[in-house]
Length: 169
Image (cartoon, rainbow, N blue to C red):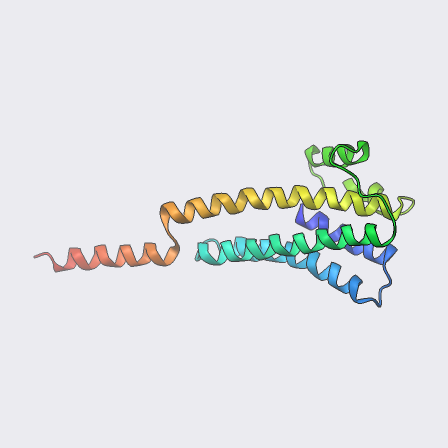
């Protein structure tokens, strides 16, 4: 989902925000940070649960920043922010259940002839879904860390067991 947010944000910004503006760059970078930090956290998971937790948390914060940017865009342009039960919002939220979803799944809601209002609101829906999934992941990672400890703790315990075995005659 974070990859869809990133790809769609690049398209949205290229279509609806001046490429030379700081907002364009900030939004694309926030979307990229969300995607990249999830990937980096996943790569770190084998050696450091603490690092994984931190990076997934950074991804979550980046996407929250991006969410606010889309809400600001709508407000500043006098466009409607869809409520949770808006018919279009329900339609966009339902797309997440499609198999093999990608940016192409959401493309009709992001690119012209879709309006900036439809595109921004659609991306707000996708970001909310992505954040929900990240919240679930963060809770699971925190529980695993509390229950099992991190990689360093496990190494320390293994080293202690080895030392204890070698001390016995």
